[in-house]
Length: 184
Image (cartoon, rainbow, N blue to C red; front, side, top):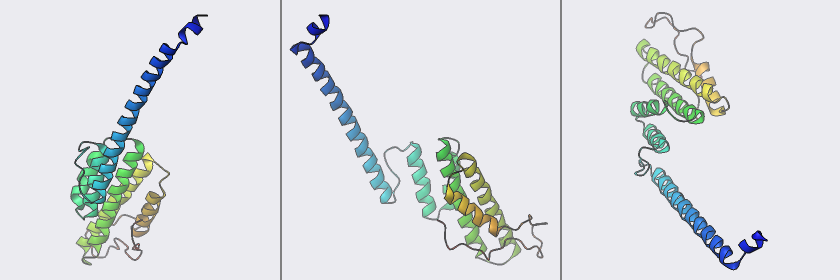
């Protein structure tokens, strides 16, 4: 009998009004979040650093990515290294993947400049750094096939044994005959 007394028009109207206000609040909050995400994505498409979310992980990641895309590898590496200390395992895996790509590209660029032993040693060092970064990426998430592919490319380019006496002119150093067409 008490339940029937609660189900009167006044109580149902109050309940529906509160529910409608709550859903309106959720709708406006979600709409605002979607607006911010859309604005963020548009900024990234233009190749600019996003103004909103300046301290957010995604914004710092995309800024580092855009800087690397423009060829400023050292600055991008610093930004990615700062990001490697935080985030989820998937995010850390993506950070190390991008660090590996930066070292890989730098190694390919350096190797093409000269055939001297100094250049060869620097290219080998950069390729070893790329290998290390790809292995760290796989330690956080072993399911990324792009990382496995790039690691395989780096391993085919590195000598089987470390170069003895770095700087020796008779050392085989880095084998660059297997240069990949491009990074995936």
